Image (cartoon, rainbow, N blue to C red):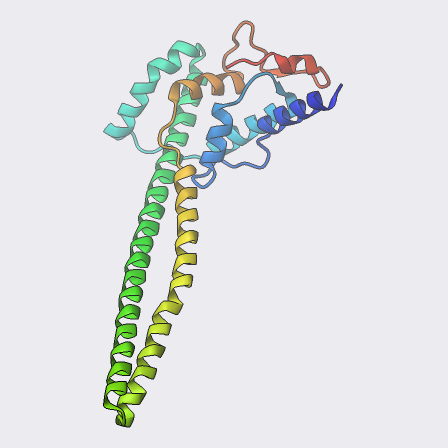
Length: 242
């Protein structure tokens, strides 16, 4: 086996490894992107880790009361689940898993939008403070120049006229000195905002979730699709299914 094949297998195994992930609002982006792009067959140990993660999380999940909103959600997915999963017990379990993912995604969306609003507000304040610093800095520079000209025009100027340019110059330097710090803070806020937007899961692909969850959890077998492969059989790596 050459180096390229080894790197391909290594990349394939990393894409299947869910051992470092959790099903929480904070990690839903990493889990969802990895799961939605999951290809079969999987290594047995990775499949078992993924099954444990899903089952362990859903076992601790308490379904919400059967409100009209929740009933509508279940009804909207019931037909899709029933059309793919024959076993009624598995179908109910699947609906509970989907409900859990819906709640996790809802919490994630609220937190993501709150974080975005907080960062955008902080960036607006930063821009305002930068504008004020430049404005006041320029004002005190002009004041410094003006009093220097007055000093020169008067010749023997009073002490106050001589001290005012020094004070105004110090104030101008103070306002301009704040600008690099504000620029660094803006760069940091921009990076944080980009991370928030990049890690946001805008919507869930319910159809793909149902199909892949059913295969991973063993609720459905599809002819021609091997969900896992035997250890050491690298030929299976070339058999990739959606």
